[in-house]
Image (cartoon, rainbow, N blue to C red; front, side, top):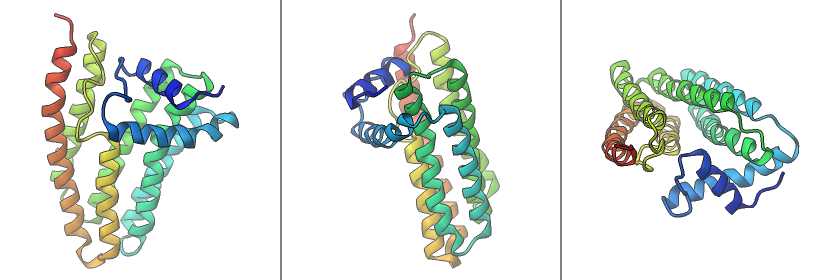
Length: 220
């Protein structure tokens, strides 16, 4: 199956509570355009969406392991982490392009996403970020995504709105912290702490953006 960009966007919208990326965030539209382009060759080769999902988890774990080595290994960890972020979106795109979207795939993707979020924070803690701050950040990320899931179960829009703290933003912030730590190994711990602090603040703002939108989408 071959879908044009607009056809892919329309199908993505159906799977995400009717949220249309073409009329919403330009950032999301650009990201999905990239994902669509990369997913097409995988779909043509018949790659399983679940295989891509599992692969993204393995790559996320590899990024955390490389980060734990410290020093210049953080540069490689940055690259691997960016690849994991791309794979995280590719599984859904491959499923849409191959007509193999399933409820199990939806659940698996959500579980792996949360595990990857955890591994990103583990990477920053391994570099030197405080565990307590990372735990607070993880709790906020979980609350953000859990709120979406519950709103969808209650008959509302599970996307609500595109916040300042979506997955691509989280990948960028963590990657930037690791990259900076690789360039300046002597300050890696401080830079990792800044990364977690920024991510925590962005996620808190994201919650403030999201909850009113979810409330408006819920039937009375």
